[in-house]
Image: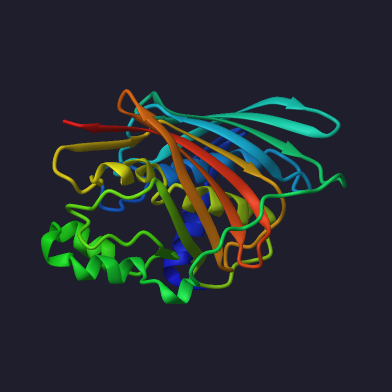
Length: 286
């Protein structure tokens, strides 16, 4: 396995320090605060480690309460709210410096048969036809601070290719509030369903809430912009592998009061709808 991908897997694995208490290290992606997908994936990992492996997570609802400090570890306190015949419910609080920075509620269900239907996967360009994130950053790298440029062009655990490639990320043209992102882990992963689910939670936070900015001709690099995730919701519909191409189809139905709502659907390359997502973010121009 690639070293950068292995580092992410280890980051999300966590250290158990007591029953229902886990500790995770923090990773600096160059933004000055902990990436929301990291704390989301770690909290789901903590919850999953208190549930039987044959009961995968089917939904999670999370709130980002305070910025995380990249220089300090995070403690995850798991509350085993309910263990039922079919479902297990967990609440997880992420703590730094004695304060809650994140709160997660997650539900797990034993696998069982039932009715089935899904949305059709929309038409999308093939991932190989789109530039990688590193190629996009390199094109405008001279205009970025050195730390962001270095982080943006280095090897990443996920290969990502976006459909909405702006000619100038510093002064983007207004466009419809829709975005499609292909992604996959850069190397083969173990056959561990729980691992694939909390890695999907991690990567689902990339390029998500900024979809709400597309109609307004601004981006997270626009001077004076404050961009922060407020919450994150996911529903997992069926098994998948994040080391194979997946498509996150996003749109933003509304933005008011400095808050933008984004929703998404995640498909496998062969068209299976495997997860649904939603997020509201603070998008404030000072």
